[in-house]
Image 1 (cartoon, rainbow, N blue to C red):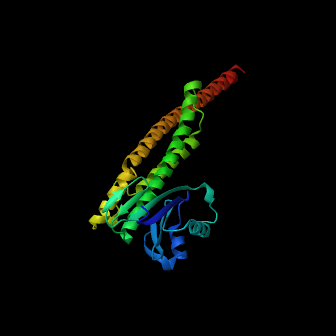
Image 2 (cartoon, rainbow, N blue to C red; image 1 turned 90 degrees about the vertical axis):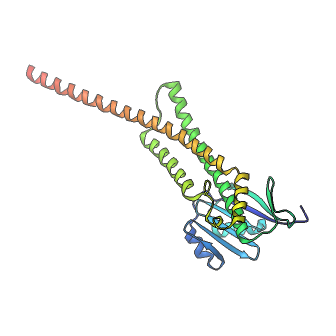
Image 3 (cartoon, rainbow, N blue to C red; image 1 turned 120 degrees about the horizontal axis):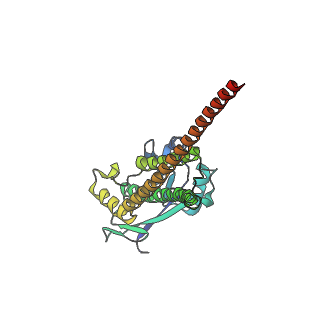
Length: 262
């Protein structure tokens, strides 16, 4: 492997959405392509950065100190020691057309399009890891309330909090659907057979489709639980309202009876 040219990639999840417009204004001279949801930069001949509005930033062929410097410059408020991250490598091997291993992809030729596809797939893989953690965290919290119901026979969660859970689940699902090319190939591959091949190899390697469907299934379980909680909460509120009405009627009857007696 040491005989080949190796280019390292490092991806970071910033946790909050990245303001693409703000980044484009700061790095105007280096932008190669971009949209409202992503932007692709070239720092020099063999250094690239790819940013995505769902919170991922990927560096290509950067040294560790250079990465830290850019993260500090662009996101000074973010704790760099608490970021989700992943790495990968791209190898230039003229004798091997396309071979993928645990942490690297070997290509016979490397161009800007191939670099962009590798960075995109690494970014999506890291985003899936983040969304999986979000979904598992929601599921863990839901299990606490479900266990309380099983043990004590009552629901210890307010309707407002249930609605917050639902909002978080829906927002996360919307972000996944809007920003990740998990089930469809990205536009850059539509007219380029070589890039389409690179994308398919990486998609299988990162297990993107099954991971995406697993996250979807987790959210379905969360939604089913939340819907049951909402139904119980509404029933509880309805019962309270019924008792209030009954009490008011009883008070009215007693008041009428006492008035007549007097």
